[in-house]
Length: 165
Image 1 (cartoon, rainbow, N blue to C red):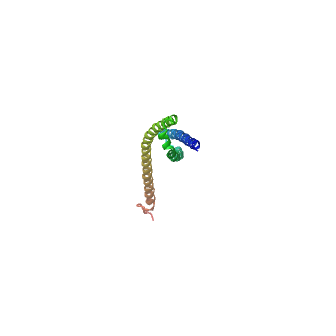
Image 2: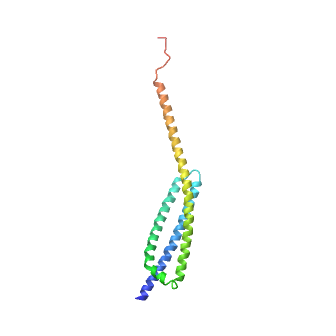
Image 3: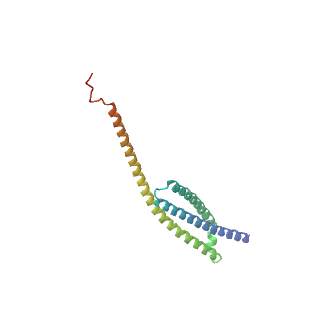
């Protein structure tokens, strides 16, 4: 029974390592997508369709990341005691986990900084779009008023009468 329990714990620890590896891969993909968004925001004109595609892809990646985090927590709860009491037996696995976690933390910090820059740039783009829309609306109103005034001139009585009757 002890051997089976030990094998199960070892399998859980391997699952934790696999989850961390997948999490790092997802964060790298999120970073790639964020850099793509950064490039899209630099382009003139702004390609809204491509930008929205990257948002959709990022949402999928974030959902997968959340699922991995949940799975990691559940599995870690099962082996936490084993890892803390038997550190020497799992030295290699613990060291690998620490390396993954360090890499995950590094890329998370970079990702947050890039997202912050992108958010600022996106706010500028949206502000400009709002200005353009407002200007378009003002122009449209001016054109409408102009055409109404032209139309009203035709309805006005003529000031010159033909006196030859």
